[in-house]
Length: 394
Image 1 (cartoon, rainbow, N blue to C red):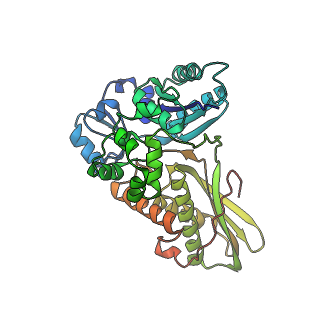
Image 2 (cartoon, rainbow, N blue to C red; image 1 turned 135 degrees about the vertical axis):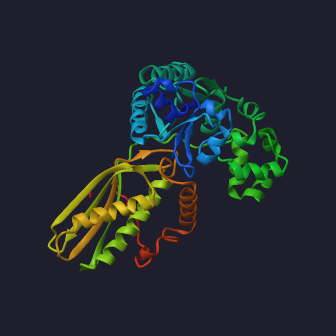
Image 3 (cartoon, rainbow, N blue to C red; image 1 turned 135 degrees about the horizontal axis):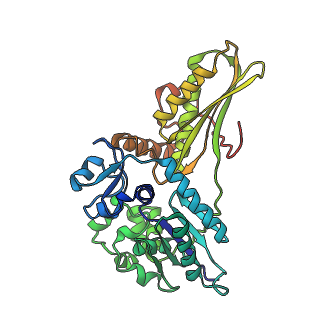
């Protein structure tokens, strides 16, 4: 059976949301992100992109390229609310969808073609999103996720593009290699040095050559360039929370030991959030005393997945919660109110140096195992298994 996969992407999502609340921003170059020179660009308008500005660029560089740009710090809670509105519209209108980030969706219309017409249905859904939310959104339709995502990029801004079955390779061939998902700056630079600038050149290269250069990813790059992608649309479900707790072999009142375990758990949970491209808006700390009396304390926070923010808040909650001088049997940490986002940490708050540090730490801990690199205070806590309890109360 021929597959029909739609990719939908909200155009300049953060900027578009800000313009809903203030139409004076329409048509002006906008930068969303940290306002200091050490901050980074979380999102930018098409007017700013004409000057060479792009997401994740240092704010200082962006302001040099586009000095007339208006800088807005951003409000992730506001963006999450609008993302939820779009999600509910899509949920009501399609048989199967996957929410891959706060502003991106995949929809599987396979089997619907003979009854309705997939491109017609997709365009009607897009028009409904625009009408009910006021947000611009683009879409691509093809046989698989990769080609549909590229088609969406070619349709932007605020339009739709269909790639008929069998036309995947001709559609991709003239495009720059950077258009292929998973080909980033470093990979494209290596390809440029090999004389590869267009997807067509990738298509005719032996896959073995790409494998020799990029390892197992080389084969994936070759397949994507040739319009091959067998990945499925994963049914969407909202993860409500993740948590971790530790029961001590012997009850303790050693505050330093307790804080070390809390820090270790917080680091592991923070890494999990960033791996899943999620942010939390609520922290809960749990204590169970030796007499099994159990207490919880929670705090609502701005959306984040940055360890340095989370650890200080967890320690703050623990100090408020631990008022009894009884032996402690168990401690736990839970992050809830989770949302999806493209950004591994809070780009509205953190500097380029912090972003680079977290990305490096996450790469090492993903490759070599958790706690490969962690804070010194957490080293005394041995490697322990991480137990996520999605959507469950502590």
